[in-house]
Image 1 (cartoon, rainbow, N blue to C red):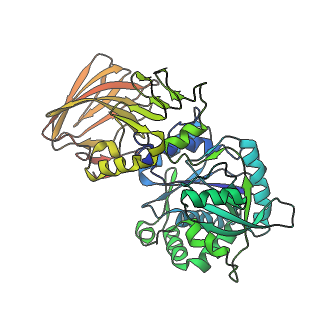
Image 2: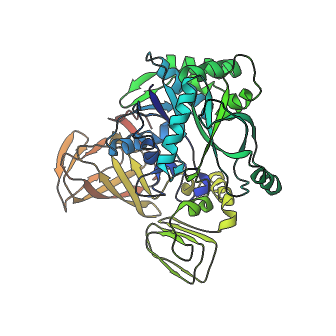
Image 3: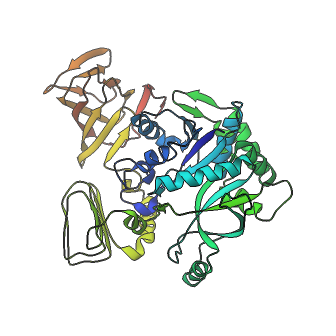
Length: 480
């Protein structure tokens, strides 16, 4: 039996701002350990028999970082691109149709890319049991054994134990996030589990179920995949067809309907799971899963603590010092600092929403921005100028482009740059510079074997990233 990991990487993680941002969300960050959450998810099923290369479903903006993070693991996989977000039910439908279109009917293991699982062995054991049920036609989910009256999660009520010895239960019902008193009642009853958002079932079972429950979603995804084409490492579905797809979650679209026993739908099962799971939905939940010192503090980076208790402190670029405080979250990045009480970290999303409403860059991008060719870091800015540190990977190149509103001065500090300036092509070595006048076509390449590092000084009336007109690009980015 083949198991196909389906990794759903569409979240934005606004409650983990300022580390998580729209164009570089939490699943791409190494929040627990050295690997990003996405990389940890890719490796989560390693060792189980019949595991296929992963199928990742992500959006356009994250495609190059997702592909690069998989490549850094030495792994291969297919990346299905959603031209616009439509929630998890269409994403899983695309994955099922893609698998069935290759003449296989694997057991899909659908996992969000932004979860933590501290006990990998326990998780793989549970997946093995779920896969056996899925092979028999069940639609299976995992319920996390609760250890507190959590109000931030949805719950699953388990029914009668299955007679096959799998350790699974009939899935009685899903319930929404409760208030504290209701959550305490769920905890006391021993019948309720946290909803993990992880699902296991055969591709054909999901296709049949979504076809009965939401034929409109199935039809839109069939049309979108029929118009798909391969673009380098990516599979692009038809934009207009997918844009017409309704948005819905796996729970709402299908799983909740399975509990009613409707004719023609598969039987739903839930397997209890105690594997150190967390959806890392907010800073407090991250604090809970991180290693702590004797005072209950979790920290990373250049941090000094004195008389501090039960606090999370993250530093990216400078010293963070905490004195005489408890139950705080302090997160420093090069362009933003967050200070919050641990009990109110769910409200961080209100700050992220306000930044977005006010069109502030801190909502979308970090100061350092990853690109398929490397990265740039905005180190300084003022009226009519800004300074960037640019790093280009060996063998990589930026697009052939021009700007209507700015000129650029380039100074190479490491490596050798191959520069196209209009009709001229030249090599610029360390401690040498060149100038790109406003309106001139140009391209920057790294022909060497070491990273190219350079300082770019932009000057002009408008310095926004949308003042780029591309004429040729190795990564399929065209126009502005």
